[in-house]
Image (cartoon, rainbow, N blue to C red; front, side, top):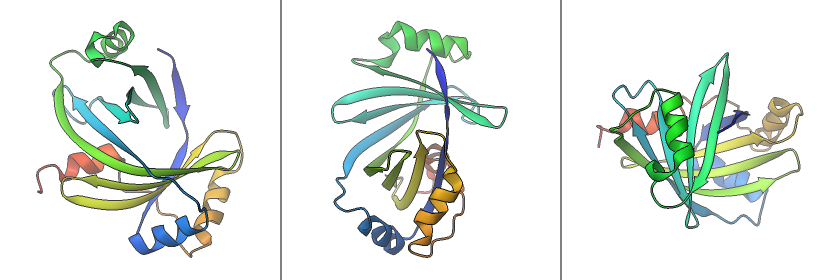
Length: 177
């Protein structure tokens, strides 16, 4: 399985700012997706997720390397552990069974594509918490930070990097509720 560099910016916002920003990109259609996170032993080591969206499943493993995030993804059907390529990728990273279910997070996501990036409006629910996140997922090379800041400026939102990925927020709050 080949990895690709993930390049995205994201920030948590209040519900009110979320709704005001989303109003600039109407009509938006929200689609529900569920991320289920698995670990083996140390949850700060490697974790992987299974995303289910519109009846499809996607395996994702992220590796932090040299200040970048390398993402390995593969659609599959059935159980992920029955897919030989997924099993091989996990083995390549030393991730072996048993796999421990860490938790799940449900996102209602709407996407606006501007030709350079996907602007994602995410309503995330996990462990009794709901948060609102704006993501800017770069698809073509450009000054993505400037573009994202201009989007946020429309409603006087200052860009502050989210304190953690969806996975980390789910993990940190797992035992609080």
